[in-house]
Image (cartoon, rainbow, N blue to C red; front, top):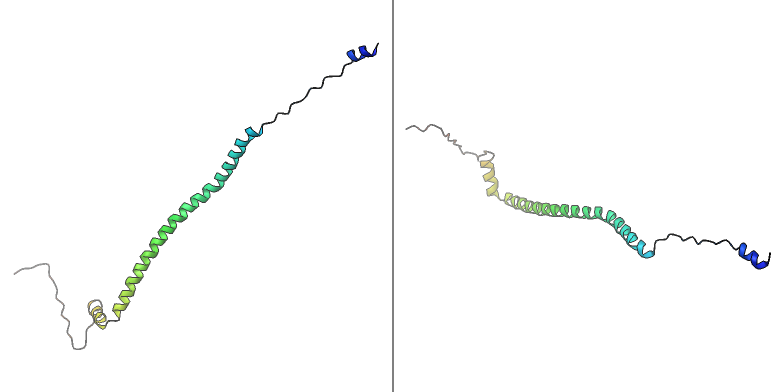
Length: 116
């Protein structure tokens, strides 16, 4: 056989090109973005919930502080009044039933029946 005939009969086997299945970058970008956003939301939502809860607690405790400051001012006023001898005597007479020497206490009983 001639050289030309050999080449014809023994041709090179055809090599198939194997195409790699690849997703284009344009197709991967939305999924990557969605994944990053999803991870961010999973991490961020608990912090948001905690933030709202802490703001509510802060408002509650600010109200408590204002209430206690008012109570403190009222008690300071009472303490200031307690230094007055007139008020001390009044409390001793009305609440404790005390008297000065030589005084006589009269208690009047009220009856339910009023007959004349």
